[in-house]
Length: 253
Image (cartoon, rainbow, N blue to C red; front, side):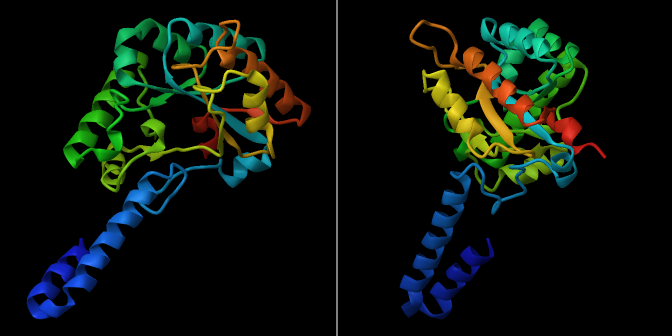
């Protein structure tokens, strides 16, 4: 805002410098735009891409699942996590929470964390105004809190895309932005081996791994790729003596 004000003032005080003023504003917008389109960037607000040092020292990592709850995939993921005695963080879309409230409550009942992934998960999330972000964040926050009895503590932007107006809204809501260390692209990749390979490369304590129980891609036999990839990933973690925890657990004092 200061740069824009200075550029506008220069047009009156030194009209001949208008190319520099316009160039500075354009460069500023490019930097802000690029920062918002890089999900792991923290130039436009705090962004957790790894677990805190204390969690890393305990050998912890986080499995996070986006875009649910899904009535077909999520129950099977919950059973799979139970079988491996693991906890995970589910970033749920507010509209889907309202559509499947019992499933959302079941996620919480089994000891997993339900966090905020916006109300609608719209494709224009990165273009929202301040009022738009308040609506997307607060409506999802209310839906999840009312359904599970526990207000989310973390927020993940749809596709990770955002603009500088999101950070003050998260601050108002008491939410922490959480991205990831590495992602699996399991909404597009149909081969579980490729998904596991992407997540397990340089796999270490402190990693935040991104998978999807909503919009999950299918293998050639029609099975959600997540259901075949996740067990292999958890076995790889066990072989390295790593423990999957929720983001809430990892950041607790």
